[in-house]
Structure formats: structure tokens, C-alpha cells
Amino acid sequence: MDEIEEAIRVMNAVSSHSFSRVRAPSLRSKIMTAKEAAALIPSGARVGMSGFTGSGHPKEVPIELARRIEASHALGEPFKISVWTGASTAPELDGALAKANAMEMRLPYQSDPVCRRRINAGEMDYTDIHLSHVAQYAWFGFLGHLDFAVIEVAGIREDGALIPSSSVGNNETWLDMADRIILEVNSWQSAALEGMHDIYAYTDRPPNRRPIPLTSPGERIGEPYFRCDPKKIVAIVETHDADRNTEFTAPDAVSQAIAEHILDFFDCEVRHGRMPRNLLPLQSGVGNIANAVMAGLEKGSYEGLTAYTEVLQDGMLHLLRSGKLTMASATALSLSDHAMKEFLADVDFYRERIVLRPQDISNHPEVIRRLGVIAMNGMIEADIYGNVNSTHIAGTSIMNGIGGSGDFARNAYTSIFMTPSTRKNGAISCIVPMVSHVDHTEHDVQVIVTEQGMADLRGLSPKARARVIIDNCAHPDWQPALNEYFDLAMRLSPGRHTPHLMEEAFGFLPKWKAAGARRVSGDEPV
Image (cartoon, rainbow, N blue to C red):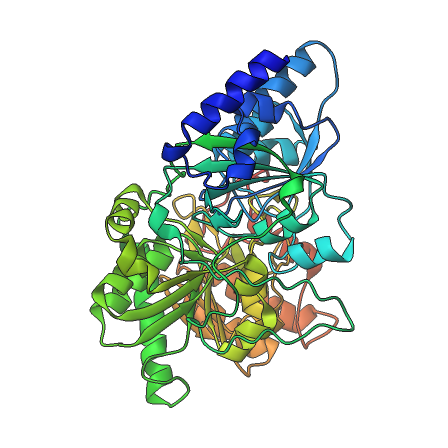
């Protein structure tokens, strides 16, 4: 760009500043197009990007970067980058870059179908990390040097402070660590988000780490803004693009049945004095089952509920509106279009009841254990001894990743995992003799719930757990096969503490032909 073009661009930026959310005069000269900003990122760069479950991700720079990389590939020029985020993002980021075969490495979590195909085909490296570990791994130097940060914000204040967007994730860390920063200032995000965030920088390193001074879900221990060195900001792109809102279907009979079993469990815990009348802070993963549980709580008798979780989705928003939920702490919003409209229509109301934090705080084991969080997370399968697989199909193909489920399961007051008892119209049991991949060991799993029932595993030996899980959680069509396996293992296993017949455990479907259990081909996941 020559001097005349540069002068025109700066003049245009300054003349439009009254309509701009870039309120810092010293930064207006850095406003440019997404294409110009994408051109600054070289091949081989490690790039930290904002985004968590489809909210708060950069919308335009990744698309332009993907186009640039596709053009390079068409000329036979290799061009790839490594992408670090908070969690999953959206088609404009993960989808566009994966389609362009632009990512050499991806971490710490993804849910894009093109990403998944490339990872499982061996075309993209993927590091699946507990979400509470990502920032500290970066600070400890385990992940290498961070070259660029591409971060969406809702605005830039006069003093240069950055107003966070609809997710926080690892943004504070990326802004601190990156050599160069590109900001997308998104005017679609409500200006009333300002003040909803609590940015607490936790950069201490062992052996000098301090306790995190958080003692209740609604407490604020930081400030509402990101801070970064303005000299590192090399580009600002003004956008007006919506988040990828997550659509949820109405709870079906299976989701409702699972929710009812969990609510019955809460009632029992309260009756026996193991939980207070307002329960304990709630955490739930994303999905229809989690929303069904929240809907049940909304209709129930519990009052004064709180949440300390990763994402705030429709069910918790409705609980806040009804007054049943008094305060929710999260790192991101994950709302349907309808719920997002409701949120935007009354942001002032929700700003007093929602705190959005960095994910190394929202998922921090110390805080989770101190607050006594009730963790509710989904899974792919569980075995009869209580080990849980939440990431892999048939042991080798990644689905999405472990996300924050491990952060909460290991440290929760009560750790609940939930799933339908079968998949593929009953052809596959989600309760198996031995899981094909272990993400959460039997030591971290206290309660398993399916639509068939609830298994309370606390204090039980492995053999006792097996009976409870088969009797309460397995589908009736699969119970005979599971019981047959367990009985045979009890007789023939070399060890009787956790009885297993290894070949039969992994070949469960081909080898066991119990009445009512249907057989599937060997290439389908067990």
C-alpha cells in the first residue's frame, strides 16, 4: 500500500470513528480489512484464536486466511499454521481452515466435522487437553512460542482496555503471550456486555503460585477488561457478524427420563442431608440432556440455585429468568437463536446474574473442589466397572475431545455421567464390558445415568459396581449378554478384583449372542 492509499485509509477510519467501537484514538490508524490483516500471518505461525463453543470467535480474518492458504496450495506452495483456541469454534474458523487443509496442529478441543475427518485421516495433528490445563501449559512453555493472537472483542475503550465478547476462554493468555495481536471488533455483540466479565490473570508459576481467592460463584476477583501492550496490536478489523448459536431440539423421552433420574437423585441426596436444599453449584456439559435437567429444575421445588460451569446454555438462561437460579459463572455463552434474542433483549438483567471468566478459572480444580460443584457430563460409553469413554469411537477415532469434563469430574462434590443406554436404534450398547478408550477412570465416576436408571457407585467395589450398572443402566436387550460376560469373567478371570476376559471384552458384540441382543458388523463402534 503506497502513502496516498495509507492516508486515505487512515482518514476514512478517523472520519467514521464516531460510529466505531474503537474508541482509543491511538489505535484507529491500525484499522484495516480482514484480508489485509490475514496477510500478516505467515506460514508456520502458531496462532491463538478466541472462541468457545461457537461464541466470541473471530469471524472474518480466519476466512480470509483460509482463502490465502488455499491460493498458496493451488500454486504448489506449502502453507500451514497451528491453531490454539479456548474450545470448539465455528465454520468461519475451524470449518474454513480445515477445508483449506490449513492447520498443521489444533488444540485443545474441536467439534467441526471437517476437522474431525482430517484428524482421523492423519492429515492434521490434534492435541486433546483438559481445558483447565491449556493456559498453564502455555505459560510453562510446554506448547512452544505463540506468534499471533486473533481475538474478537466487543469494543476498545478510550484507554485501550478491551471489552470482552461473548466468550473469554484463553484470550487473556493469548493476548499476554503473543508477539503480535489482531483484533476483530464486532459490533454485533451487545455493547451491554461491558461489565459482565471478570478477568483474573493467573500467571504465577510453581513454586510461587497463590490460591485463587474465589469463594462463591458470583464473586468477582479481577476486572471487566482485557489489557494488552498496544504496541503488539498490528491490525484491527471492524466486523458485524453473529455468533454460531447452538440449536437444541425439545427434550425427547430419553433425555427427559435421564433428567428425571438425576432429579430423583438430587431429592434423595437432600433427604439424607448430603446436599443442602438449594443443592450445590451446578456444572453441565452442552446438549439436550443438560437442558432437560435444567427444565426439570425450573419446574421443581429448588430455590436459590447457583451454577459454576463452562458454558451457559438455554436451560440455565431460563432458570435465571424464572429466579430459580440466582447466579451463573461460566466462560462462554452457548445459546440457541431464540435464547440469544432473549439474552440480547434484556442484557442488563443478565449482566447482574452472569459472570464470564477465563477458562483456567472457570475450570480450575482448586475452585471446583472448594465450591463443591455438582458435575453433569455426557459420554460415549461406560463399562461395567465405571470407566468412561467420552472422546473416541472404537478406541481410535476422535469425536470431539475431553473438553472440561475431566476438570470437573475429578474434583466435583458429585460426578455424574449420562448417556442413552443404546445408540443406532438399539444396535449398540453404551454399557460395555470394557471401554475402548478411557478418559475418566472408575475413581472419578460416582454416578452413571441412562434412561433405564441411575447407578450410584460411591463406596462400591468393582464387582458391586458391575452389578449395579448392569441392573440399572444397561438396556434390557443387552443385560443378558453383559451378565453372561460378567459371570464368565468371575469364573475364569486370572484376577477376581476386577474380573475381565480381555479377548471377550474387546470382542463383546461378535462373541456374545444373548437373547434379544442384536449383532452388528465389526467395523461399527462398540
